[in-house]
Image (tube, rainbow, N blue to C red; front, side):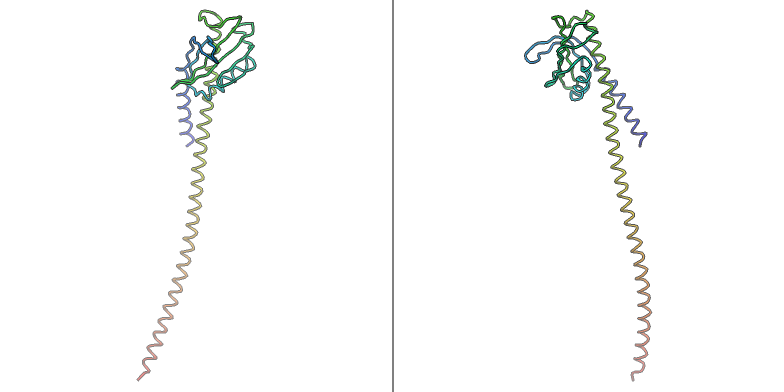
Length: 213
């Protein structure tokens, strides 16, 4: 059972890794957040928004104090040396579609957004999202592996409990069967004694009738 579970788990993780690699694509984008238009980059991920949001907020924490509200994450003065030595304003949002979740990241530095794909700052921002894609994939694989393990463990515990209950029922049945067999032997003995008594009474009856003239 353990071998089967491990094989299944390995297959799931390989599948997740392959899908995740296909889903990792970074492209320029724009987003309207609280009626304001932002320009930045998009990252597509084949991870549920519920979990991707947690991974993203945790990842952003290394750049500064994160404020989150209804799927929007902001850092007023982020430290992102790879993009700029000056403070960076980070505005981000996570959206979910039919098959993919999308991370939008806007970096506002020195009065303008990082949007030009030919700039070093854009390439650095792109690297940040690609690094996050790996960061999220590793955690998602661990989460799914844990989920599968817990499910398998519960299934094993359920089967073990059912087996124990069946064993107890068998033990009760065997005990009852032993009692019934002992009772049968006792009744057989009683029946044998009754037959002897009946035969003796029959003989006595025949003797008594023989005396009648």
